[in-house]
Image (cartoon, rainbow, N blue to C red):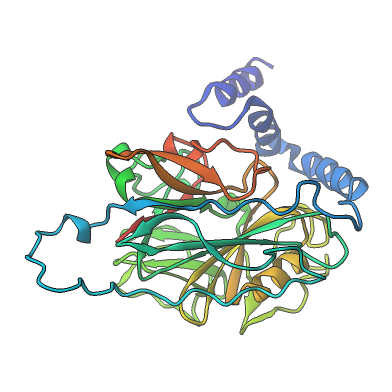
Length: 369
């Protein structure tokens, strides 16, 4: 009892941002109680399904307006005399609007620029839509990121994925925030991710062939695909974070998303349970797509990704405490390092400063090039 009590107290007082309730559940799960936790969660979500029909109580959320220009590496380059209009930086075309599943609400599925711009151009677009034609009072948030204007950085957490270099101390350091545009959650804890983790020349956890993988190149370009088919190790790769199997491939949802007979998309709750879920994908032009919301099962999450234009996509973390997406803007016009986060969905539980202080879980951050 003394040893268990000491372990529990250590878990409650360890550095990080998780509330004590989450730390308690995680401690029970990590000390032989995972089956109990899984059964309780499954019972709760199964007996408290999302409402059928209706409309969002407050309509669709308002899209945050474009903000100040983020300071990228190119902005710090020596200035040359301008004798004509500056060239337009390399960028992707904005995504086509997403087709709603039912009679659309005003602005549903229509992308709007939001957050900090890069060299004067929108780098993030967001929109909102109902996730299926049945649960019409729920709202799912979608974000599209321009991988030509933005570079992606993987930030390890204090506990996950465990091992390997952690130069930023599990947060976005203040001296990097002048270029910060957005950030979002990573995947499952490594013991449930059915995959591995590689970064900066270190194979921290062995990579699995066939696993869904978010791959970041040395230049900060991010892509999503199947390891061993879409990607193989070469010197251009900086980071690989794997999580489960692809849920969208070839622009379509993969077979089996609506079945609980496999654990390809997580054995904790099953594929059919409606819960907070998140995912990341890539479109045909290389744009990065993030999708998240409450009341999603594996199949409806995949369906939204397809409507958003994803050709390949992987599930990220699930449950309300882990799903986060923020865009950032300057607090003061003359202080580009002083930033504030804005939630993609107002009912995302974690505070806007989640990734501005050391946290337990790994995440991805996007910066102006």
